[in-house]
Amino acid sequence: MDYLQSILLGIVEGATEFLPISSTGHLILTSDVLKIPQTDFVKSFEIFIQLGAILAIVFLYAKTFLTNRDVLLRICIAFLPTVFMGLAFYKIVKDFLIGNTSITLLALSLGGIILIFLEILYKEKDHHADRIEKLNLKQSFLIGLCQSVALIPGVSRAAATIIGGLFLGAKRKTAVEFSFLLAVPTMLAATGLDLVKGNLSFNQKEFLLLLVGFVTSFIVALLSVKFLLRFIKTHNFIPFGIYRILLALLFWLLIMK
Image (cartoon, rainbow, N blue to C red):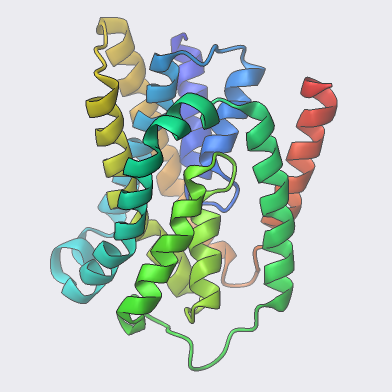
C-alpha cells in the first residue's frame, strides 16, 4: 500500500461509514479495484481508519457524550449484543469474511433489496420517539442486536441500526443519530480487539499510512454526517438501496466475471 491508496481508502471510509451502504464493503471493493492485497496489515488498516470517522462523531456530539446520561445508558445497552457477538465470532469474521468479495457483494445486494422493501413498508407515526432519550431500554437492546448482523461485511452497520431503529419505534432523525452514537463504542471495541487479538506490530511506514488514512477519514466523515442529516429531512433511504444493488451488479459484471 502507498500513501495515495491510503488517502483513497480514507476518503471511502469517511464517506461511507455513516451511510447505509456498508463502509467495510466499499473498502474491500476499493482494495480490489486498486489491487491492494488483503494482508493482515490491510485488514487492520481498514478497521483502524474507522476510528477517524468515529472521531468525527465524538467531535460533533461531544456535549451529548459528556452530559446526557440517558443517551449514554441507551448506547451502552445497545452495545452489549455486539460485544458478545464480536467476541464469539471474531476469528471467523477476520479470517473468512473480511476480504471475501463474493460475500461482500451478496450482502451488499441483498441488503439493498431489504432496505428498499422495508422503506416501502415503513410509516412514521406521531408516537415514535423523536429523541434518543424516549427509546426504552428494550428498544435500545434490540437496535443493538440488529447492529450485530453487520459483522458480515457488506451488510452495513449503519443500515442495520437505522432500519432497526425505524421499526422499533424511532423517528428517522432519531434512528440516524442513534446509529451515529452507537458507532463510537462499537468501532472503538472493534479496533481494540483487533490490536489485542491480532498481536500486531507496525513499522514506521505503516504507522504513517495509518495516520494519513485516519486524518483523511475524519475530515470526510464530518462532511458525510452533515450531508446525511440534511438528506433525511426530505428523502428516505430507497436511493441508498438502489445504489447498493447497482454497485454490486456493476462489480460482478466488470470485475468478477
